[in-house]
Length: 434
Image 1 (tube, rainbow, N blue to C red):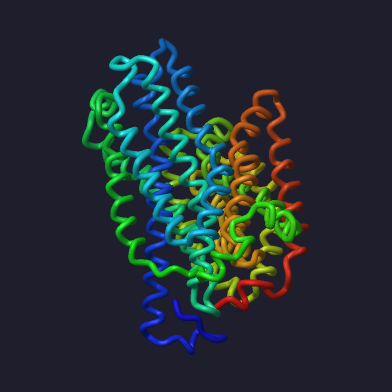
Image 2: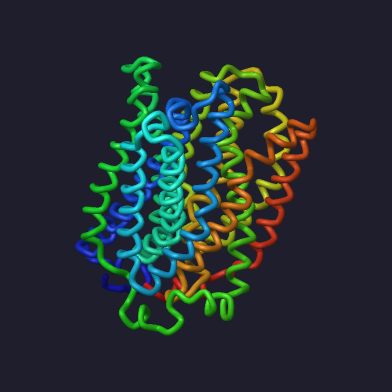
């Protein structure tokens, strides 16, 4: 893809169109990956008895949750493998392999025989499918973030890079929306018998469409870069870019924790702590997530105006100051509308980070280890802090120390602020690449 000079005015109409198509192609796969990954969580209540027969529904759900967690823990391995592939063999190849693996995992789950048919092989194959999907989604973030940052129009990189989280959140919303639609047309028995398989078939078909789009993408890495002896080398990453890796790890830890606190955990928080009806909590979160998705380009444009470093500092500062008041207010909230407003405010704060998170990480590494550095740092921090958010929150609540979780998130936001201070005022690498 042709490189250009300093401002967006120097792009020809054809060049702008090519780059916008590249953003669409890359982000389409991101949407499909997250749709496929989260369909599992939303359908678990229906297929759990088919794979984990038990007289206790809670035991069934715990087992399916364990398989979900296993997929989460595969992300660092996926970040390492696909980051190396992207740096050594090209971003495009990495993204195509990633979407193919997600397609395979979804198809496998869609057509898996149940425990009744093949016994213990059923849950083992379900685990295998989720491990494949975990590897895939673990590799998707770093490669997509790298690719989108490299093709984004200069001067508007924050805006274009924000579509990574637009499609990430969109994938979750589409997953829950499809399940809600199926609930309107199929009975509980039909959903348990076969209906739960439909979203996985849809996800696999969507993955093939995304694969077609990604096949036509232009490669952003050069042959010279891919043949560099340090390309995709984890030894080179830690030898020459350890400080950058630690910085990305530091602010991603807080970013992942607060993201999962106000997205996936929040619905349970509204029910278990605030005492709301499950259906009401679902409506609140669906509306809040939709607004959150729409916020990403706006906050991406804001970062283009005020600078990525300033945006990250606002994220850390506001997160540190506002997390405890917001969560304490939600704890005793009785109005669904007020709960919606409070969660939306929290997600607006998170948007300072999520809208540009992939871009900020990509700017920290040179092209030969960029996808590896972004993908591995994100996946490790995400698996440790993001993946454990719900478990930590519920564990502290169980021992009567729920408020401690609010302060835990606050401390990690302060850590994110301190690490954001380490960000350069001008990008060291990506600023000069395109």
